[in-house]
Amino acid sequence: MDSLPSPPFIEIPGIANFRGVGGDHVGPGLVFRSADPTKATKVGLEKMRRDLGIRVIFDLRSAPEIKRDGPEWVGVDVDNADVFEPYGMTRQWVPVFAEKDYGPEQVALRYKEYTKSGSEGFVQAYRDILLAAPSSYGTILRHMAQPKPMPCLIHCTAGKDRTGVLVALLFMLADAPTKDIAEEYALTDLGLAPMKPLFRERLLQNPVFEGNTEGVENMISSKAENMTATVEMIINEFGGSEVYIQKNCGLSEDEVKLLRKNITAGALASM
Image (cartoon, rainbow, N blue to C red; front, top):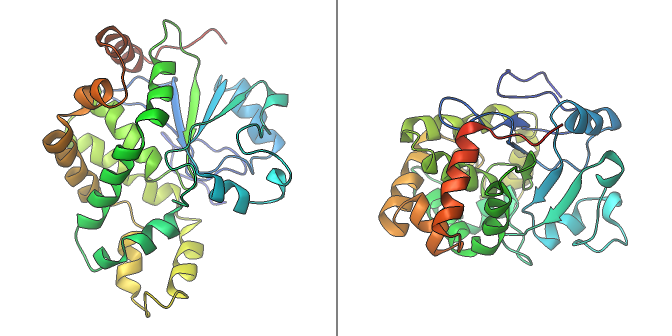
């Protein structure tokens, strides 16, 4: 994998799009995000545990994605599979869509009518994620709303859509400007650069795209304007991040206050 800009990217051998969630609004050290981490090398896993202090890994993928994903899952129940335990990290399977394949290629196929231009397809896809995610997101947010939450990694297949929407909610809760939220989301274009040729090749081979290179490029991108439109949708349709977290995910007012405190302070458990 090519070297990535740093920070916020962190070189973890075997994992694409790995970066800390932090900056002027969300404190560093508590939350990390990435693409699928199950191909991490021994060196990468040791770095996650030793250098970053990660203790919990939240997997947002669906069962079809995991079962498709390779030999390390063969013969293992998806909700019990754990390649991280030997390194002192616990995996929690918290799928947004338990039985629906929602990898980046499948999202592009599902919203192919929006591939020409604009953000409409992404807003629709991310609306669907928000409607399906309360149980999944609620589990992760409650982890962060503990008095001393342990550092965690959040991932889906690419660390782009399901992960990106949750990170946007965190930034919104921390009162980050929409511009900053969109710029953080757009970093995924850099983080996924090594994987994009594969996404592009597979999609262009599908008859539904009929050589629509421009549309494919749009659907595998992480353009800032797509997240800008999504933030507007969250405000207009869900009442904003705090309302969504309380009303949809079921966190109490006190839990939301502690969550905001923890993510803005970058609260760390003892290493």
